[in-house]
Amino acid sequence: MSQQIFWNGKFSKADYFYGTKANQFLASKIELFKNHKKLLCLGEGEGRNAIFFAQNGFEVSAIDASDVGLLKLDTRSKEENLEIKTFCMDLNFWKADEKYDVIVASYLHMYKDERENLFKKIENSLNFDGYFVGEFFSTKQLTYNSGGPKDLDLLYSIEDFLNHFILCKKNISEEIVTLDEGIGHQGEACVIRVVIQKI
Ligand SMILES: C[S@@+](CC[C@H](N)C(=O)[O-])C[C@H]1O[C@@H](n2cnc3c(N)ncnc32)[C@H](O)[C@@H]1O
Image 1: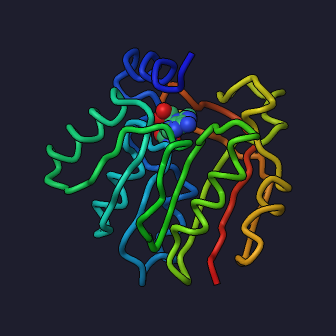
Image 2: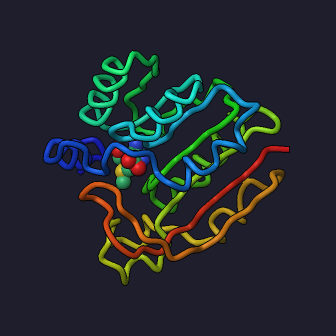
């Protein structure tokens, strides 16, 4: 099943599957981005992070494979008088020909063998001093029932990030957190948190 069919199915069932509030970790980094403007959200789904950053004055674009998710994002941004550019595509085919000051992703479940290509494109798309900030489910999340895929190939380890972004400053941690994000993520979870700066 394609990512689009899978995620369209989830996003058709609920009002907002992961709620309307931005991911707490991404939102908590807003001070870090205060001299930055152009921000890209990857695997943005129904748009909770994109809306938050646009409300806070960033020039926001968002990419996702799910047209159902992005339609909700577009509807919400129109209601709130925000301008957010959306692109419906599989990230494996993202051309990455534009530069950004900040790139964010929450719970983007890319397969292990797709990551090298994606991470290279993220690094190349960042302006110098730009940040890539993300929260991902750890491989240890397999033993929790708070959400996320039950496929090891879609889960992350600290090494996945340490072995990439070679010329960047990296702060990568594995943490136990309590998620309260719609019906999709509820309860104790094990996550990888990533703050990467291109230098
Ligand atoms: C767990 S959801 C998270 C959505 C959003 N980031 C959030 O936290 O609310 C994963 C999202 O990644 C998108 N996604 C997964 N694989 C993708 C791919 N290869 N290309 C583009 N989007 C993808 C899905 O369509 C889905 O919207």
